[in-house]
Length: 185
Image (cartoon, rainbow, N blue to C red):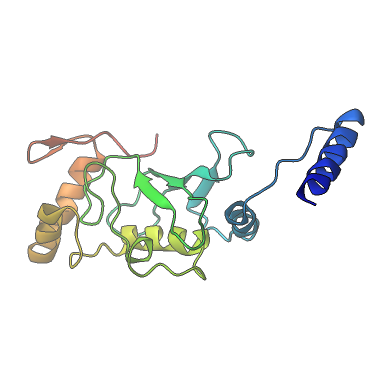
């Protein structure tokens, strides 16, 4: 019985190829869900999505955020999204490609956002993550940090934290760490 199903499938594929059409790649449930999520994206005006590997690779994309409020106004921050085949049962892996002085993003680009870890649920989507990332720039959280030094400065001396953010975004040093210039050109 299985051989008959295989033969029937092969005949369909051969017929499609004979008509000059390539056989369609079967999409995984995760790819189908991601396609739906991307089609329904409602991005803030300060946020853009791009597909560096082309539209055929929906599972890997970048989101660029240019905050329009908070400490990080004027900066440009790029995040990579790697969506696992088990999406939406597993969250995407999100990393910040832009080196930034931030309590919730470490110097290696790891992002501390609860919905990317313990609070992830399959009903959440890419739009939810993008809004969460935007929220990190308008309201950095010193209570669940990856960069403990930045979190302590934000908690204990918000004015110094603002100066440090501005110095880092201008391409300067904070402590012994050098940051690239992030202001729009």
